[in-house]
Image (cartoon, rainbow, N blue to C red; front, side):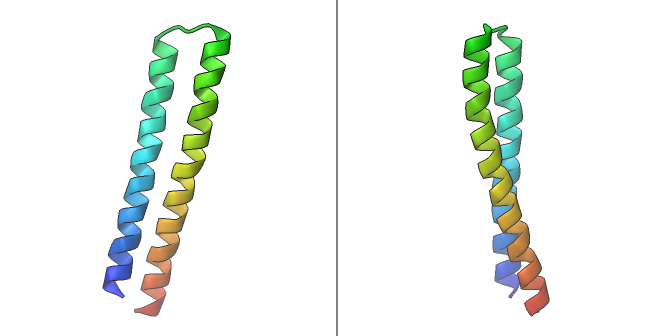
Length: 71
């Protein structure tokens, strides 16, 4: 079960890295002073990446919880 906990932690860290990447992309788009259409297009992609990263974090934390409960 310890392997399950470490696997869940790794998946959560991948999700966290994705969230940080979303922040970097959004900050870069804001810093570039893009027009409204281009900004909207980039931020729509960031929203999709953000949801995927949040889902990965959620799945990782669920794996950790299940691993702890089974220990």
